[in-house]
Amino acid sequence: MKTEQRQTNPAAGTATMRAVVQDVYGDTSDVMRLEQIARPEPGPGQVLVRVAAAGVDRGVWHLMAGKPYAARLAFGLRTPRHPVRGREFAGRVEAVGSGVTTVRPGDEIYGMGEGTFAEYVLASESKVAPRPANLSAVQAAALSISGVTALQAVRDHGRVTAGQQVLVIGASGGVGSFAVQIAKASGAEVTGVSSAAKADLVRALGADSVVDYSVGDGLEVGERRFDVVLDIGGDRPLRQLRRVLTPHGRLVIVGGEGGGRLLGIGRQLRAAALSPFVGQTLGFFVASEKAADLVLLTGLVESGQVTPAVDRTFPLAEAAAAVTYMTGGHARGKVVVEVSR
Ligand SMILES: NC(=O)c1ccc[n+]([C@@H]2O[C@H](COP(=O)([O-])OP(=O)(O)OC[C@H]3O[C@@H](n4cnc5c(N)ncnc54)[C@H](OP(=O)(O)O)[C@@H]3O)[C@@H](O)[C@H]2O)c1
Image: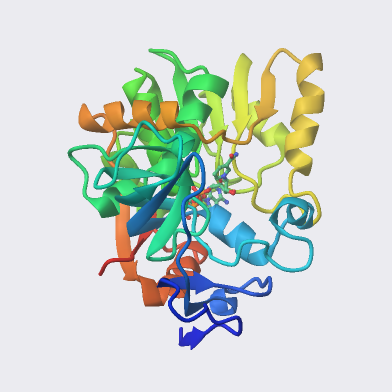
């Protein structure tokens, strides 16, 4: 990835920063490049963060590719509205805008912001929390979007309680690695589904058993039935997912890969439409990004119940390679871009 000057050079005297930007949508990360761009200033309710590390999650690919196409209504119709990629971060507060009361310059925080593959990012005060005391910035950078999504899947949508049988499909990935740990912390017996190569990771995360998705029909669980199925990886038909649920079990569709280029959520909509007519509860959700859940995650981390699984890091100049590594299915848990390296 080359460093270039943007055509619209920042005016002389403007503070600048290195950032990974894209001008056009594309399926591969060669649409991204490192540039020197103007450093943002915090507005009301905003926090300017000196980014130490940025997590890489599937959402980065969706924003980069502009897919599913319907998402371009939010991302920008012809070109990405926000040119800098990355949404998860850990870093130090550099400055705060008017009305910000919960964080101060110098605080170490983590959370969500728009454009975290950069030396500085703006975040809303409502989407940040103090960094867990026992985590490095690299570990904390992996936590926000994947961790909050997993928390909401287990707690709000799966409504997992102690003693339940929980199946986590996609247990070795970013969201799944947190979901396994949070379901275990809720007292459930957890079965993870992953590739055979990552079964050791899924066990180390606390799963009681692991199913290899390359065997048989990809969901070989014998006679076992699950109270809750968290569908995070793959693109299984509803009938296959319902087959492994108890008669009154809950299916939570988290993942959106392979769901069609236009809407991307055909399977999710069919599940929600069918749910009122069957004994099982079938549904999906889009995670809501809120500080209260980051604070809850911090508690789970500081009590030792959840630890981010970070596979490896890439320097900022190689953020595109980090995205390719993740989309290529290589990551064991999460990949992180180390901005301050
Ligand atoms: N609903 C929301 O608000 C929300 C929020 C965040 C993410 N998501 C979605 O959640 C999904 C997962 O995101 P992520 O960041 O965790 O991605 P990820 O890190 O790439 O993980 C993908 C997981 O899927 C597994 N997998 C791949 N093919 C599979 C198959 N055929 N059967 C079963 N598992 C399979 C992978 O296993 P191996 O690596 O072992 O092959 C891996 O565990 C994405 O679709 C993302 O868009 C949704």
